[in-house]
Image (cartoon, rainbow, N blue to C red; front, side, top):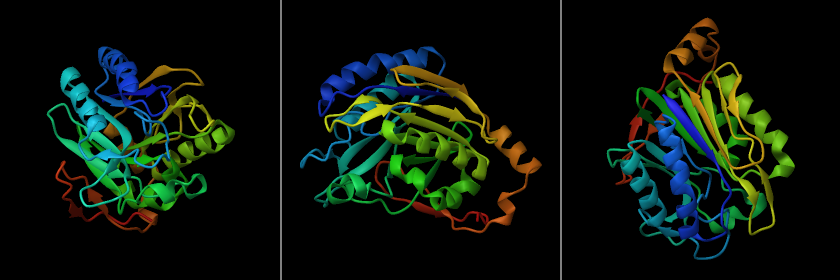
Length: 275
């Protein structure tokens, strides 16, 4: 399966401007043969702590992703602030829109306390995993990358980790190092999207979006400008790597929760030992 990472700037807190800027980039990715297109964390607003920045679940940002997926016949994913029914604060929700109209969600497990996110956003409760074109995909958001245990937990049911972010340029070496570590230690692909440009909070972002192989090789990457990163990934390569170097069998861990459709209902899936 071909993945496209759209490394893009974000117009601060202006959803319509971001939709207008991103739609041609999704079209370009689809024209390049991508079957899955990944946008940045908070792709439609920037990493905003402004009270009231949240939108309803299945709000305008989720609809944009669904419209793009349907128009181009590809998966499209990105995170946005969504307020679930009955909640006051939003989740930082990674919405994955399928070309057939199905919608899946992962809610960021680790709000970025250092940046004030924990005061403005709720934390999700579990990782999720879903099957996309024969690949087992597990998404995470930005700060989650620092917590290797959740990646370990999901490893038995993961061929590809998605990581979408607004990672600051000042810690770019943390970003690139941790991405490769997560691929190597879990013997899985990592498809990572980081924004570029300066947010309304004055923080600069260097991009460094990458696709990394199960052996830790950078298959495709980008530096600090708006661009498209393309790479093909193959579940057979994950299986072959894990067979050649059977490291995961020496770890123990917990199961992973499968992604539910838009209703939000989930079902449990027991995984093989992972730690």
